Image: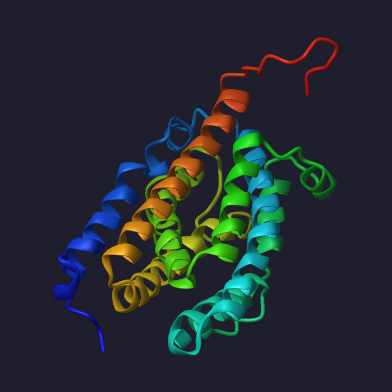
Length: 258
């Protein structure tokens, strides 16, 4: 039975509003990186570099979904099913909304990278930027150490951002400025996630509403989510500094630049 939140001193609606406020406050659609893409001033190769970073992020984060699936207690079966279905979608076993139109999402990433001028070898050999490493490691830590329903609360803030990023920034930018059609296979990663992540976020929040009901769990959920969205913003700071502003970090004597 879903809690009303009365025993926690905060209603379910108030907690959800606070969680979504964190998502909005650190929404990456407002980052200069995505604004430049929307305006057509971002070099498409830099967008490819971003997706190369994402390739390495996804390769490491997906196993954490399996860890969370394995750690779900029997009473949280809905959460376990969510992790399992999400893994199946990402692996190209299950299509969106259970359809037969399934595609390995790593292939979708590589398809866009090729359109942006990167070979598969270049993507695989991409050096991971510091904030991207930190962000990936944080996901892995949360999956191993925190209650699985709190991982879903964190993901709701992250995957929930993807909907507006893609509907308001990437897809309009691609079609207006970079010569892609909306149904172009090269940008299917973005069109599919615009839809899939709306459904994912809805399901994640419903599970969180049901099981994250104590003051302690709610406080922890908010802390985990805020750290995650801050790390995501920081990962785009790295991309923007290196790819757009062409800045380099100070290096020790004798160490060559990348």
